[in-house]
Amino acid sequence: WKDRQWWPVVTPIVGITYCSTIMYYLWVNYRLPFGATLCVVCLLIGEWLTRNWLVTALVGGGFFGLLFYPGNWPIFGPTHLPIVVEGTLLSMADYMGHLYVRTGTPEYVRHIEQGSLRTFGGHTTVIAAF
Image 1 (cartoon, rainbow, N blue to C red):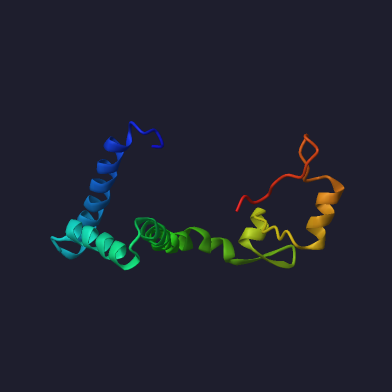
Image 2: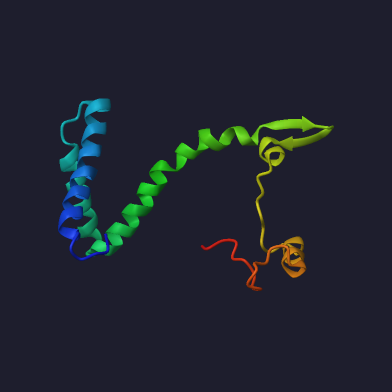
């Protein structure tokens, strides 16, 4: 995509695919025949409000991500079920071994100082890249 030769090919395909998916969804579920027009109008309204395509893309990309966020709930919901293991109340995620590492806790710092989270290069492993 970053190659300058491909943008004339990729950009129209992505634009058509985006409009056609919205069109398909609106037609199949609601029988509304103006999905592609709605996409173009929403993009133009976003551009008119911000006067900047970059801001429109960033805000729109964020909302697009939030659109699919609830899809994770049925996937990860069962891991929050309570179970009793050898007399101890745990969640399913705890029993399966999922860890939520909090990097500010003293035990995490102890792991770093102990060297169990170090790489062969001698420097500390980057746990989160965000």
